[in-house]
Length: 586
Image 1 (cartoon, helix red, strand yellow):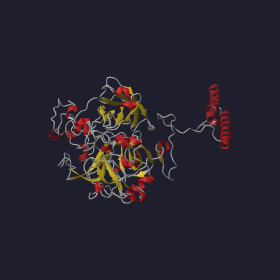
Image 2 (tube, rainbow, N blue to C red):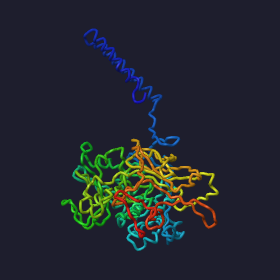
Image 3 (tube, rainbow, N blue to C red):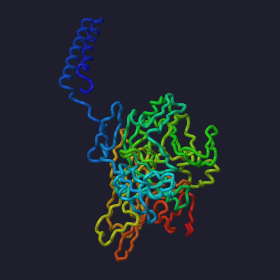
Image 4 (cartoon, one colour):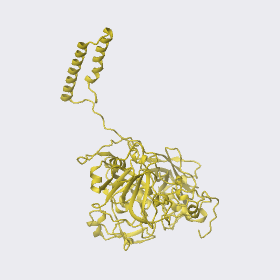
């Protein structure tokens, strides 16, 4: 009978008999009450003996998690180390083995960095892990020359600092789980050279009653751990499309500034509770996160907070509402592993903040301090980065009129987005050989804030009609029904439907029942660009005389050339701030 046995259920019956007798006689029948109590104790002893001899018949079944696959998997907890509790785990028990981190530094490059030759085979054969590999030739002589990096990563800001994304054709090979060596990297400066044995995490602030200074071993071995996949995307993904309209203050992210790995760490709420933070009175209070890296002051001055002036160098930091940090459904994590390995230096080693459903710019790497305070963070980068300002606001207007301090324009949650990765840029398809067949259109899509992507649509007639694509949903939602990962999708398009057509469009919807907008909107930072993704379809004749369809993306990442959005004739005519006139030089 689960947690209750038969004797417990009989207890009300025995006492009701005594109560009825008392009601009839208007007096307490002590003899009857004693008899009832004796009968109850006998029944209790018999029931306990039965349970001891035969065990419970109906044990509780383990909780299972719904997912869009034929057989929903059970969310299990692997055996924990003695004395350490394990939270909900959604890792290898659901998704299989972690993708292999096959670091492949180059010794040279060509074709605008699209191709290169691998380092000597002897290094690949003897390396025990990714940190045993030598650095890529482009990092030699930089402050980061101790860090191995994959040569296939497209470098967007020159040799240093390292800001890069993988070619989307590489993401398309592995799809749901991204190998660690091919995951987006955003560095504002030099990577701190930190050590597991000496690095500390400090938790303090005016709202902390029990200050903590934790070593990495204390953090990872004395607190409950959790593990689950999270998509991290820079909110500058697809910025080059915006830069082709008018230059923003950001560099040229392509459409590969996104990745999905399984992170393992400690839930922030467990740390805050250990630090004695009041979990009942949270209104207006914030948790601030500060990294280790020393960066330039983006403001160029002391800032608007006299009690906390900014110097020439500042730390990268941000803050979250305390209520969000304590919410079990939001699963904010201090991570120390990704895909079963300790974090790569570029991704925050030894620990980083992971905020599922948020933009990557809020997930502080090389985390050193957590402060619980009465207000939003006064950190320079909390204000001067990741803003979605109105399209009429230029750099001069933003500085003059204080737009950087208007927090209603801050970007926190990741936005709805989708794009095409199949066919690839400039891929061709023989018309004669495939006219009676279908071709696959595919790509990825994501939302933010835990919202589920509910549909993907494809159009070949510029949005006049739409067809539903198949969503390949591999994520198991968290126990509160939230989704933290991208989905991949596929659509079989009859090749004959491309005749007379000039573009292939895709768009996503989520549980808010709102699709992606059709047209781009220019903003000063070029972030949260999520308009409908469009691939041009060209009918070409190759050197053999064969006719082919050729597919062209809007841009290529970084300084790589190509893409229809780079041509004046194909540029958009408006982007939120009035009609646009382009010169041939643009």
